[in-house]
Image (cartoon, rainbow, N blue to C red):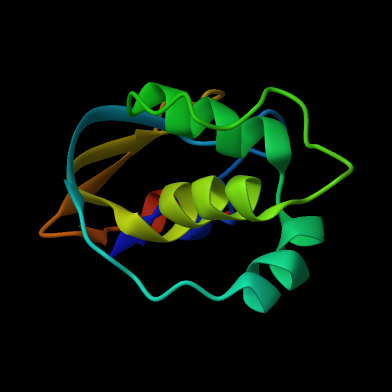
Length: 123
C-alpha cells in the first residue's frame, strides 16, 4: 500500500536517472483514509529520517495542508497527530508516481506501486 511514509522513501532508478529523481510526483491519485493506531514514540523516532519538504509537498498534492512548510523544532501532541494522519492514514489506492527528471511513470493499482523497470530501463 502506498502511504506517504512509503512515498517519502521512493526515488526513480531508471537507467541514467541519477539527479532530480526525488520526490516522485503524485498524479491522478485516488486516496482512502484509514484509521491507524497512534504511536507518538514511533513518530518521534521516525521524524529525523523524513525528507520534510518532500513530505509536505506530497501531502499538499493530495489536498492535505495540515503540516507546516518548515519542520518544527518543538514537537507537541497536536503536531504528532497531524503527522500521524499524513504519514499513516492517507492511503493512495490508484494513480501514479512520476519522476520529475525522466518522467518515468510508476503506476499505483489497488494500493500497490509498480516500481519494476523494463530490462532496457535498468541502469
